[in-house]
Length: 353
Ligand SMILES: Cc1cc2nc3c(=O)[nH]c(=O)nc-3n(C[C@H](O)[C@H](O)[C@H](O)COP(=O)(O)O)c2cc1C
Image (cartoon, rainbow, N blue to C red; front, side):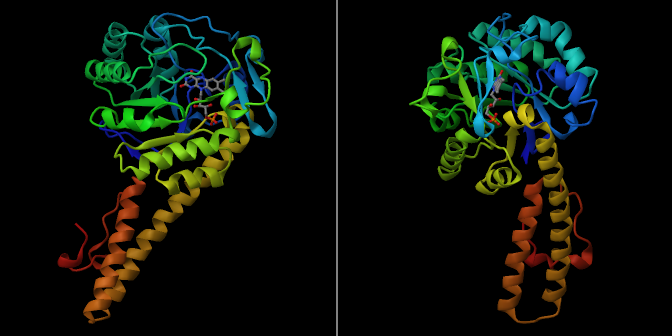
């Protein structure tokens, strides 16, 4: 669970691009969502990335497959190239239609190209009731700020002017540990990883989107890189929570990311390719998570009962250690609201601080 400084908590995000700006792409908005195949309330929605000026890119709403191709094994390659209607649209209409009218929990993804754009975008977003801002500096299909100092400055500027919690989205080939460490005091999450350049995933094959630069690959074939990136941040002890995405296509993969130390997970291609499986996976996760909370709460009572029934000091110390571990797990879940009743507690001096 990632808990932001504004109190908002989330465990599962819809990766940028999977539900457009929140309402969904036309087949989602008018088909899959009303039919109940996708339930947007299951996700914290990260919008498709907005640039300051509108960008034509390669995506045409009537023919999305011109720059998005499905690959075998559940993978996708896209060369959308950041097609988007620009920030003025979001300010005047997009926010109202996608967030105000739907009440969906939304993180806005932006890519300011200059410090001035970062200031203006930050100041406008300040007035909007969103959960946070994600700064995308890792799109493989378009130009974006690349220098470490430039990225750090842009992120700091958005954070200062918007006052919303801010996160950054990086790719497997970015110096993500260095950037995350430099921004530790500013960002509240790091989203790892974005799509990977075709050539780095399939060096010996030609991309079906060669004419558009090859495109970025998402889906199961990038999951080893996604796990590595998450592992690197955790191993170095960097405190910034990781929003781990890239190749999450089943329950086991999602669970693995949480077990590896992810604060939350992001699901992208699976929503586009098998939205039914994404819904099922999350429903199962939530059901199990809820159950675990009950199970852990019951365990506190069981441990307290056995503590009281034994006077041996070493036995009691071991019980207290286990009790502290269960409390830690419950606290980490972010969903634990009940303080144990008096009889489920240990004597004061044995309670975890
Ligand atoms: C069609 C498409 C459009 C995307 N658009 C964006 C975008 O605008 N901004 C962004 O940060 N990531 C974008 N992504 C990348 C996804 O958010 C995600 O990081 C990536 O697909 C890896 O996750 P996955 O394997 O679960 O799909 C896009 C991906 C796809 C397939």
